[in-house]
Image (tube, rainbow over all chains, first blue to last red; front, side, top):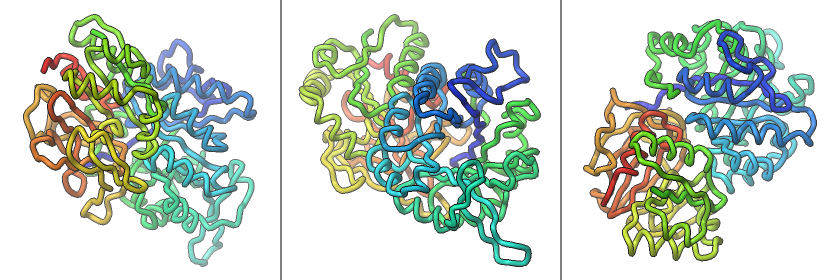
Length: 262
Length: 216
């Protein structure tokens, strides 16, 4: 009996609507996050990630509604991130039905939110999302820094130091995105993934850059990630969740093949 | 059949409620799920379910804060023997003591302590997060027909602590994660799952259906 490596599709949600939706299935409403969640639930995804990119804080209610409806319609664990500013935001998402809540910029600004949230909801519910970018030059020792605002703003904070610090504060998982690789389809930044995975004793989800099924495998075998996250390869139907799992199983990675409950 | 799903501000009620309705369908029994913490509603329920997402201490405080809730649970479950299911922290609260963020006294319905996971293999990460299979370690009507073992179905775990019962006979199933992790416990008319049946798809619904069928 072994804990299985998780495959996690991620949906961007803006004002309650999916931005890049599933476009290979005949969904009644491609923009409805709950329809997409149901499709991934039936397909056997191990968890689902919603990233709320709603710009204004006044429209936060839209994501709560999405989470509530998803919890009512799916028997699948859901992580929700984006725009989480304080412990009250975490509480609202948890009560709406999120299993885990991911904190990004708020933790960069003030790390104490991680400890405060973990005290209330337990470490297992608190994910810290780290957007990292390589800052070391050619021939130098590897170094990555935390960036905010979609990779535009450097913070000067070392990514490995930060990961260790938030894990100590009570984070239960790290969602690690390489801003160099995000959207490139060139594969994960494996050196970054491995460096963070080996530096912390909590699970690390690799994200950013998946273009092929081998990339998913490498994230686990070379990057030492506990889970792999991808968006477009699944939404656009390049590969199905089942194909991804079959490929990982063939590479010797333990995966759950009995998923799906339509 | 009336199912009381306890709302004490510490849980994912939407999924649990939906999964219980699904389990009712499965066993072909008409019924409904009542959300809340009203002692009268609990008194008239045929089944009581205590979910729990959060830290042990925080959930314990929430439970104690609801007027009359603990008395009602004690009366219905301990005195009248109503079938009860605790999920995740709702299961951990059955213990005598929880060690998450300092020692906290639990309900004490299942003798034992809730302790931090400490997997033997160094590469294993904590929390134990994700899908794992189960090993059956006891006999219980709620386990009947569930597909256990390596080739069995998976359950969804999300936790850093687990309940170690004082009596081996109270431990009904485990998962393997660098050693045995308590997955299902049971004593008298009380049962608890560390994993989330409401997130565990086929296995979860099958377990909930068994719980609803169970007539101790």
